[in-house]
Length: 162
Image (cartoon, rainbow, N blue to C red; front, side):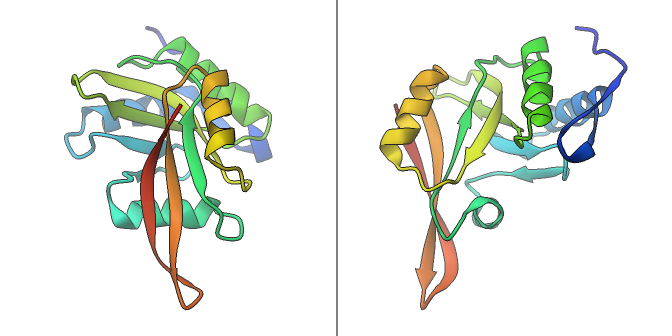
């Protein structure tokens, strides 16, 4: 698919360079380093939630008052970078949300690329299941802080199924 050679203004005046975004994503997808990941294109950061440091970093970035953080997909992608992925990413950024690109591989080895969001507003598992249903998704990743004497020492990573 041809990717338009253009830039658009996103949230907070950030410049979204579609060509740059697609190039970064293609490079990460070619890498053997990551199987499942969440990619922050604004900060050029990759989170692999199976990695303790990545999960902790994502939790610290998103958690409000130590509440659980959920990452969930809002598109139904396949293994490629589709027009839906690019347009959904731009649309969410323009309305002030912070979209991410997620890649995951299912038990049968099929690869899925999706636009994902993090929600950290004190919702529980039941509410995230409603959100999953609304977006026709099966699963969200839940990050929960582990505290010792009031200090975060780790993060639990769980799946929440619809």
